[in-house]
Amino acid sequence: LTFESSKNQILTIINFSTSLPGPSLSLAKNDAYFFSLASRDNYLQNMKFQLRPYQKQAVDKIGDQNTIVKMPTGSGKTFVAAEFIKQGLKKRSLISASSLASSADSTSAALFLVPACDLVAQQRRAIEAWIGRDYYVAEYMGGKSSPSRRFDVLVSTPQAFLILQQVEAEKKLFAWSNFFACVFDECHHIIKDHPYRVIAQGINAWQSHYNNRIQILGLSASLTYAVGHKAVEAALGNLCYDLSVTNMISPTEEELMSAGYTPKDDVIEQMHEPWNVPDGVVPEHLRKTHAMYETFMGRVKHGTNTPFATKIYKVVREIEEQIDELQDGRKGEFLSPLNQIKLAAWEEYAFQMSRKSSKGSPRQNLYDLLEIWYVALRMVVQSWEEEEQLVLQWLLINSGFHNEGWFSYNLTISLESVERLLSSDAHTIKSQKISSLRMILTDKKKAKGVDFRGIIFVQQRITAYVLCQYLNKNDDFFTKHGIRAEYVTARNSKITPSIKMTPSEATRRIEKFRKGDINVIVATSVIEEGLDVP
Image 1: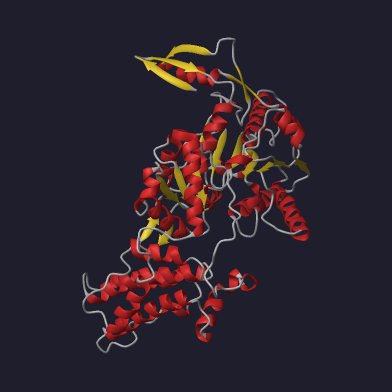
Image 2 (image 1 turned 60 degrees about the horizontal axis):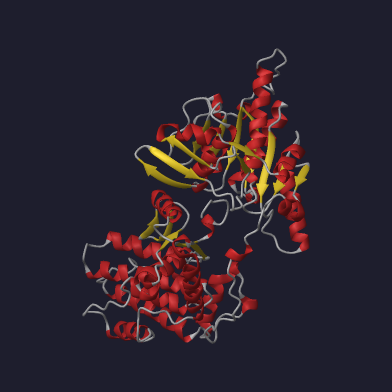
């Protein structure tokens, strides 16, 4: 929709050439309308949307069974759930007006669960637009006030809802007896001790005790993280058991395509080149995530680390030794945390010790430096000693090579030995992956122009931070081509003890991405599922 304002009038031009991911839009013959700003919301609310055939068929097949709907990303799973909820609300409105209403029929609300805070408002708006203004859709997540009046639909994160049920147990508003249905968006999260699974088990227990029923609807594009036939079979069996599912719906590719769904495979760029990796890194067959710490420390003991990893480890030990020398006989005050398997505990220890030190004192300066180098060592360990260039960038960005005049000779030499590994242009990462990323981003930017958006997924939060800093500050190449990046990680998550992503900052950055103020997001899997982005 393109808006051109003239005083308080807006011209809306609807372009029908674009295939929308949701339902089709049904309008009168004219495709241009003039209306006042005051009437805009009413106009948008009253536009008639229709489900695509495969969406309508999915709603019809749900019936009164506990169901999982598996549909690809962008095919409109949310609209299927919204229509399911709308029909349930209408049914209860009709029954409650008659004398035939039973206790089960008197339940008045639907619960719509989403796995991330950033999805709450998004899904609330989608459901609200679909079911209409006759019904009230509330939202709740950590940090927000609980709904104060009766709602027809509650959109919430699972952990926040569980806490809400405990804290406000006296309010029947949040009791299971108030709900006739529960929708699990991205239901494949129902594993182990995830809050989704806790809620599913809570529903089953409540139903068994009170002999009432809450209908369950699960939504997902991929039903499991498992790999291998037996593992997938077991995971799906557990998922169906936890949700008491008796019905699985998945439109065929032909049904999807004939109804207008177009998979956008071209937006995902896969880089298959065999990257050059340093000699002597941890072999692939030895990379067991649960044994990451033991593997690295075993290599330290036997002297089999890469030369780069050896240098990083040596600097860390030299800083620790200098801190120990500054204790003035107070032995035991500093205890190296490197014997702790949890890698993030290393930098957390340095951070806490810095806070206990006198401001601006040599000890505090050393602890601040040690935190930076503990993070560098963690990056080395987590990358199986591969990501040398990112580690160097982390040190460069955070003044990790700063040398006080009073540092010991050994520490000074160790710092300089690592600093010499930087390229002649310290602001350029010499990496095949980064070179390929450069080429792909700039090619896409040229092709798409101002409409360009890109998401770079990374595994570690620290990688998101370092790569984003590099894109924005340390490479004129990206700036010249109009690449403006931000990083996004899970709300309230720590990059390091000194660097944190607040909920408001995550929301602000995603909104900037939607508006085009930034065009690249470097992210962990926090935005992988369900979040609507351009």
